[in-house]
Length: 74
Ligand SMILES: [Zn+2]
Image (cartoon, rainbow, N blue to C red; front, side, top):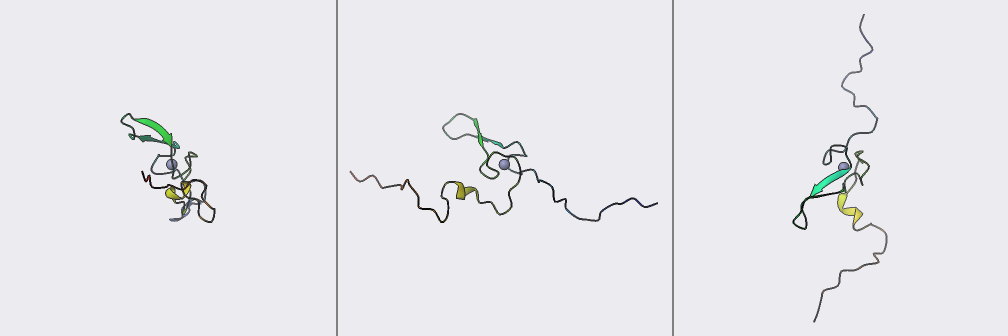
């Protein structure tokens, strides 16, 4: 008979991160030479994080930033 096939329902398991394809690493060309860096979207876990802002890793919201970029006035 009919198998227990779920209809178009996404699994609630971990979703592989798209930018790094679930590897947790991204190839960055910054600096001139290609090198692997931790994927900012999944924080190197390789698992897609819903509503995760990659830029939030650099500027955590709600917390006072220790390092403030100050304009070099000379
Ligand atoms: Zn990733």
